[in-house]
Length: 200
Image 1: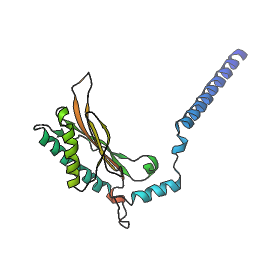
Image 2: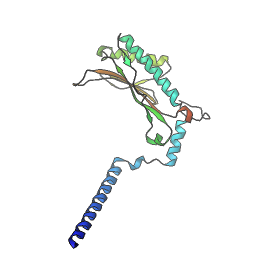
Image 3: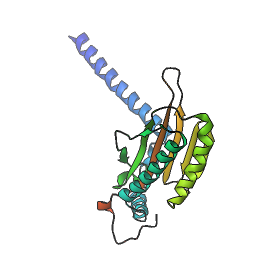
Image 4: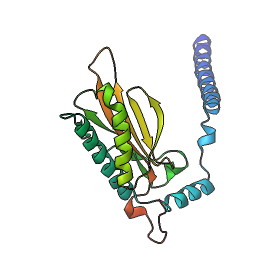
């Protein structure tokens, strides 16, 4: 009987010890990964909300981005007759991250338009130049960042709107060219106060 009791006690003690070790390891890992630094103070949350209220609504930002996408889809089709970027199957609207994560802010994250074929290599320079011109006609200033072969990333100077054109090449499947739209954090119109005039 005493042996049985001792065995049970040792088993419980070992179980508790394992939990303690696991918790300590998680704590060290969280600290090293910067988890603690992501805890948002009420002051930071208030600043983030105030910042969002200086921006246009999510709906207006999305409409602006989609207008530009439609122009770029047209540019690609004019350069290469028969080439098309197919509309995405999902809206790709998600919660914002960082200090905006506890606000009502939303963003467009990776809305991808799939091409029906790889975009020809000899037309990428023309695609870049005509895309910049088309954006200018809409009153949208774009700069080119991260230039590379078969890859162009456009973004507005404030980084709020980004468009990536790229061809994915893998040995397992046919090459595919994508147009990917990202839009930064904005409040939906229903959550945006009309008392503050948006600046962008």
